[in-house]
Each structure stands twice: as C-alpha cells, then as structure tokens.
Amino acid sequence: MHSGARPRIGVLAVQGDIREHLAALRASGADPVSVRRPHELVGVAGVVLPGGESTTIDKLMRAFGLFDPLRAAIAAGLPAYGSCAGMILLAREVVDGTADQQSLGGLDITVRRNAFGRQVDSFEADLAMPVLVDPERPVRAVFIRAPWVEEVGPAVQVLARAPGASGVPGPVVAVRQGAVLATSFHPEVTGDERVHRYFVDLVRGEAGAVDGESGERVGTAAADGRGQ
Ligand code: GLN
Image 1: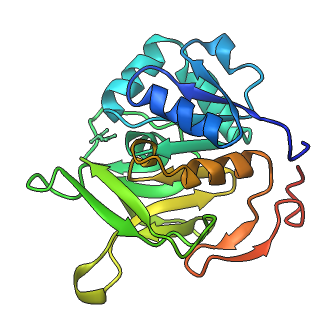
Image 2 (image 1 turned 120 degrees about the vertical axis):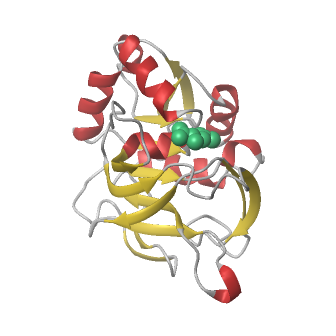
C-alpha cells in the first residue's frame, strides 16, 4: 500500500470510546469506519477494539454475529489494536475472567482483569513508550479498571510498562505481536495520537520490528518478509 493512502480502519462500535477512537484514527491519517455488523468488516485493513467491559463486549459481539468473523479475520492476519477491555479480548488467556468469557485471540499473552486493584480503580501515569514518534516524550496513560499483562509468549514484544516501586520496572501494559497491538490504557482520551499513529503505520506495514524496550528499529515489515 502506498504510504500516502488513508487505510480504512474499523472501530468495533458496540461499547466504549467509539467516537474518540474514530477521531484519533482520522487525525492519524486513517479512514475510520464504525463496525457493528459483519458486512462492515469487508474492506477494512485493520480494526480497533475500544475499552469498556470485556464480558459485555464479548456478549454483544456474539449477539451481532461479529465474534466469529472477527476471530477468523485476526487469525488470518487482520491488524488489530485493543485498548483496555480490547486487550483482554485479544489475549490468549484471561485471569479473573468470567467462566463463559471468550477471546478473539491474536496475542500470545496472559492478562489479569482489573489487575491494579479495587482501591485504585483509575489512575494516570507517564510512561516511556520508545516505539512511538518523539520517543523521548512520555505517554500520559489513563488506566480505568485496567488489566495488566502477566505473561508474554516468545513472539510478543513488550512496548511499555507501568511505573514500578522505587525504580523497579512495573507490570507490562503495552505489547505487540506482529500486526496486533494492545495497551492496558486509553490513549484515545488524552489528545495524544501517537499510539493510534503507530497502529496506522502498522496497518500500512511500516511499523518495523522493534526492540520494544530500547525503541530501536531492527527492520521494516518488508524486510521481515511480511511484505506490505
Ligand atoms: N475492567 C474492564 C474489563 O474487564 C476493562 C476496563 C476498561 O476497558 N476500561 O473488561
């Protein structure tokens, strides 16, 4: 795809900050569309799964007939970005999920729901996320009853961690595996579009394989052999 093209990116529109994700994608050079019905997935080059309540989103996706087509599309390589509940929906394994909660898959990670504890339901923190443009500038991360990532498989790159106690790195809160990206936090509410921009680049096949913690690019998608 020509890098000047505006890739069409779907936003799962059953719950959460749908309008904010559409706006952040538009500002990041994409052509965003709401997806609530299976036919609206046709022609999208990527999909965003907003936060909300993962158990509810799971049920609504199944009610709208979206669950199976989305799972199949992601398994076939459709780039996806999940924020908060969206991260939970992409995780291979969920700790503290409900018994009937299902996953779309895409990320070889184990997440813990509501991991930051009941006392601190919501908080904000400045994080280093060196894969973004302007890498020195921290990301203002808004966590709302957020999950964290407890385990990552060998193909998963860690992109950011929450601040830990006294200099110790905190839990993993942003990951990427191939064309699938997830953050525990909500970048759509801060007006900083760099996470969305990173995802749009990834959809265009321009976000190279990156050593997540140093931020060093170790190749481009094309050089990886993943093509455009
Ligand atoms: N706690 C929610 C869940 O389990 C996620 C919260 C969010 O998306 N802000 O799905």
